[in-house]
Length: 328
Image (cartoon, rainbow, N blue to C red):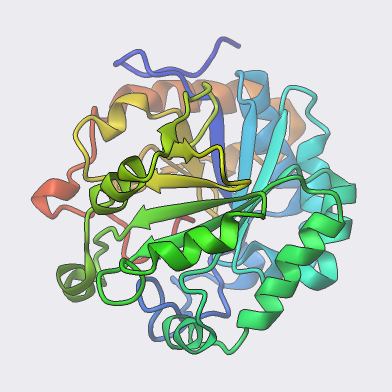
């Protein structure tokens, strides 16, 4: 099977695979009212065998990186087995996860032993009270202990995701930079994105990542070059800092030109864009091992529908009601 590509000659090396849409946090920008089932129950999420088959199909078509997302992926009791199943594919060089971090202190060593290579942890504030206000959970110190545990388990870098919000953290750059001066953390500011349920919050809290970028450049930070399976972050480094800063700015011109990732939801639908209109069902082809060719063919054919760009600038958020639905 040749490399997955679309009509704009973009090649897809990166799969974001949601394993659940359940989350136990209530972040203001994602699930402010807590988790509500999307018309499915927990038994209908992709099984371990289905995950094994879908990742095998992507790996055979040149996928080099798989990110396990949710919801909160560690809520699955078989999460360590999921990591091990993805690791069975020799072509997949990076197995990453995005987590709220609340189970890291307990489980991160076994995740690493199973094959996890990269970690992204969501931390929107370094102030424990503000963290509680944003997430609905008084877990700041537990998450910080989890980051320490990740380093103790052998991870050489941890990525920390912070959703950039005008009133909460856009003015806290100095505090964040002091935190990463002596820690190998890539701090990633993600512009707040409008979702179907989050229009009012977006209008109140959105601020462009260029505000942070301008400050970094004034302070001597420099832009790193990207590799082909990297995510969309612009990554900056500074000789005086052990850490790095990444900026994810989906509203910037040409953001989609370097798109290299596809998404599969927790119920087995292929999503060509986080803000696309509908998912393409794959699950009927995940029931047996002998359907690999048909599965790859459906994915390859579907890529002909991938649009050149998202339509966030026009306020069109597509099917994405909240970011737990497809996994961000």
